Amino acid sequence: MEWTGARYADTPTVEVRTWIDAPPERVWALVSDIGLMPELSDELQSVEWAEGSSGPVVGARFVGHNRHEAMGEWSTTSHVVECEPGRVFAWAVEDPDHPSSVWRFRLTPRDGGTELAQWMQMGPGRSGLSYAIDRMPDKEQKIVFVRLRELERGMTATLECIRKRAEA
Image (cartoon, rainbow, N blue to C red):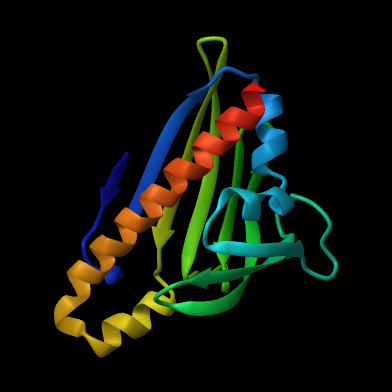
């Protein structure tokens, strides 16, 4: 686990990794299945491909519906920005040229299985966190740190669920 950055404008990132005793093709089938993601996340409630999109290819769009105790409910449209089957699946949230966040799964064959990394970057575009920072600018670093730790916990749990499913 690692994270960098302390201010939102620094586009802080967080990454978690795990090793899975399964081939990259099996892991890929799980990480590229957006319909599975709500089962692996406390925050993501549902997700569906947007009109005109039906699967993981660069340029495809999907809509995610989220809920968070402190931030309420919201929906976002994500744009697939990287898609190499068996290797990488990444999406930018809202405006792909100025996203509110970017998320990526990277798969690497290792030791007869797969190393799976999940990475995310906050910003540079505005997100729900931006509104909290606007209200309490003196607490920006704490707000960002708390959210990064929360995301790290959620991502760690997601990778553990993917590992269990892939190894089953």
